Image (tube, rainbow over all chains, first blue to last red):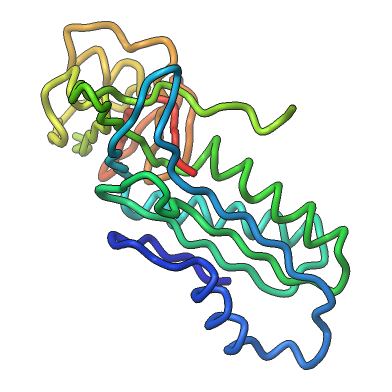
Length: 147
Length: 77
């Protein structure tokens, strides 16, 4: 399990590739599921030019570790990576990557989705958007992960 | 006597105008009572509360040395 909170832009694909080369799964891994969240340039009908992400240092890491621990109790997963941005973010930049390695795809898919949805509702991050009009506002709630 | 640290985050920090403060009380009390001692405004309905970085409900009673955090719904990811 690796959890990283980063203040600068990162390449999720390179991070996953790098992490995977460090894994000692001895041929046991048959499935990797990945979620990448990126910043949109619109929200609630307005054009957004930037965003600042604040978090509760310490609690964020504690809650994410707890979420992963629960996922490991629910599904047979082999390893997990979470990277989440904080600070100033621009449209198209990645905000979060979650990657789960498992023996089979069902566990990889389900655990990855579970970790992401739990992060959305329990990890103490807060977004403040800056609109193209230069007005800034806190994002009041996350969108549902269900269709 | 119990001494606790209060922390406020995001829009709630801006509303109360403080990010961190320390209070000493003569006896234990619930986190909602702590809020009422520290703030003139009522606790906003949707506020999340954590003690020592774990979520608690508003009737949770604090202990000496606790860090109590108040914040709005989370919006990461």
